[in-house]
Amino acid sequence: MPSKVRVNAKSQKWAALGVIDAYMKMYPHATLDDLNKAFPRSIFTESDPNLPLLVTLEEKERMAAATKTTFDDDQLVEWKNTHYYLTTNDGKDIAFTVPMWTKEMFDKMLSQAKLYDIEFAKYEAAEKGFGKRGEYSLEYLNGYVPPVPEEKKSKAWLWILLAALAVIAILVILLLMKGCCKEEPQVVEVEKVVVVHDTLYVQEIEEIEKNFNAAEFIKGKADLSESAKFVLHDLAKVMQKNPQVRLRLEGHTSAEGDAAFNQKLSEQRAQAAVDFMIESEGIDAARLEAVGKGSSEPKNADDPTAPENRRTEFIVLE
Image 1 (cartoon, rainbow, N blue to C red):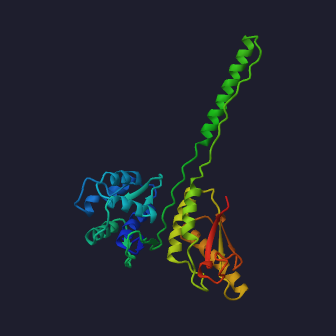
Image 2 (cartoon, one colour):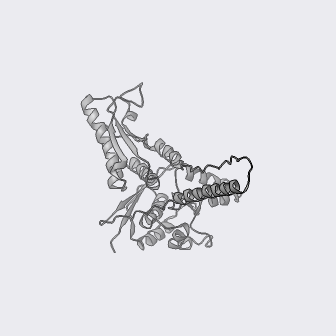
Image 3 (cartoon, rainbow, N blue to C red):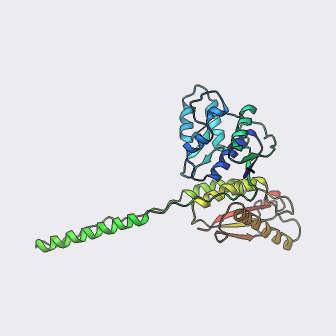
C-alpha cells in the first residue's frame, strides 16, 4: 500500500520519535500498551528484552534513579529540556527506554514503520553536542487525512444533578422536621458545589510560547521556518485538547524598508501561521485571528533593525 505519513528528521533519534508520533496521529486513541505492542522493544535490540520500548516519564525517572551512574540522569534532563517525549491522548507523557538509536536499530525501526504505512525522508545529521535539540516533522501523503480524536463527553451535568438532589433532600428533611417539631426553625448551611476549570493548558502554552516567539523570519519573507512549524504542531495539540482556547497571531517586522511594505509583510507572516494551523493541523478558523503590527512593536527597541524583530507571536484570547 502507498505510504500515508512521511517522517522528516535531522537525526535517527528524532526520526524514531517521529515514527511513534505518526502512529499516534493515525491511531489517536492508542494507549501506551498499544504502542508497545505495535513497536516491541525486542524487535530493535537484544538487551533487556523484557523491557517495553516506551514508558511514562515517571517510570523513566525511577529507572534513572536506580542506576549507579549519572548518565541516565543527565539523559533524562536532556530529553525533558529538548521535549524528546510524546503525550498520549489519555494524558501520559511517554519516552523511550533505549538511550540511543544505532544504525542497526534504526533500520529495524524503518522496517517496522513500513508495516503501518509510515516512511522516512532522508535526514540531515543533527548538530553534535550534549543537550542540542533535533527536530522532526510529519508530512501526510497520497491524500491521507489523520482522524480527529473524539472529545470525551463532560460529566459536569451529573455533578450538578447530584448537587440538586442533595439540596432537595435537605429541604424535604427540613419540612418534615418543621411539621413534627415545634422548635425554633434552624438555619442549615448547604455546601456549595464549585466546579474548578482546568487551566493547565496555560502552562503548556507558556512553554511553547518561549520557543515560537523566538522564531525569526528571513528578511523580506513570510515563509514559516521548519522550527516554527514544529512549534505550531505542539500548539495545535494543546488547542485540540482544549477546545475553548482561541488565539491571536501577531506578525512583526524590523524597521528596515518602507513602513507600508512592513505592515503588509507583518500581516502575511501572521496569516502564514494561521493558514498552517488550519490547513495542516485542522484547527477551526473561527478560533484563530491574524493581526499585522508592522515595525511598531520591536522586540529589540534599542536596535529596531535587529533580526529578532522579524517574528510572529501568539496571544491567548480566552
